[in-house]
Length: 311
Image 1 (cartoon, one colour):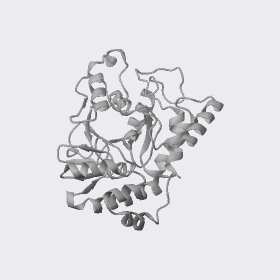
Image 2: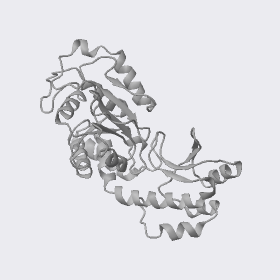
Image 3: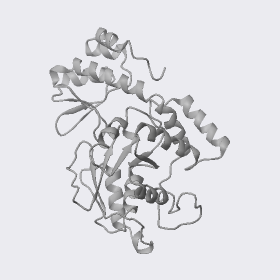
Image 4: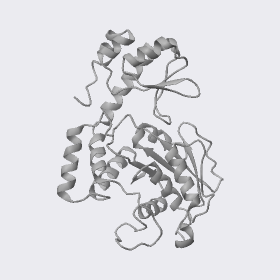
């Protein structure tokens, strides 16, 4: 199913361009996307991967194997599944020892973070949903940050993709080879180590690169809409939680039946959490939705200066 906020004209253009060039997997579009992301997150290398599942497998592939080399609890289902797949795998038995391999990885999910322990031999990685959170995570001592694009509200993607950010050239080289069946960059058909297929679809890469041009206005619009909804839902203890497993939004403490009906009438999705409810923040909040919530004038005053990202 294609997400509702996908620009179908842009997607069609990406498909046509990809078909014309004949470059479908891990080609020039992936390199352009990674270069664009490295401009946004300077000083860190960006390694595109097929999904969060693929990204966690790539972490495992930077080690010399062993069931305890990638650990984590309370992670998104794809990340936990990748850890379990690694634990069942015997790839290390058949592979050559990794040059510059790391001892192992401890994986956290934002914002359920554990303190980074510099003296520990394990490397630290964190999974986030937003590029703004990537920027924050890079200041907290992590060795790798996994951006789960599918969970983002700041950009949209027409298919699965994740990006691993790291400052280590050794980790980067191991990941780039491992995602392409163990072939080092520039050495096609030279499978120097056991690898996986965690390559990026070029259609998705082209689309996401185009989406990055709208990152800052879209981010501004989301923040404005979040502020509007927080004000409208103040009596329910509303506060913004922009990045959390399952998708960020506005956290409220109580959900009376009358509010659930109002949110449904306004077309706003919400879900229960262990501490309350998360209301999903739409990229654009219509006047009709604001009227359902009781304040069309507040909406008009607040977003009048923000230009639509899609329109």
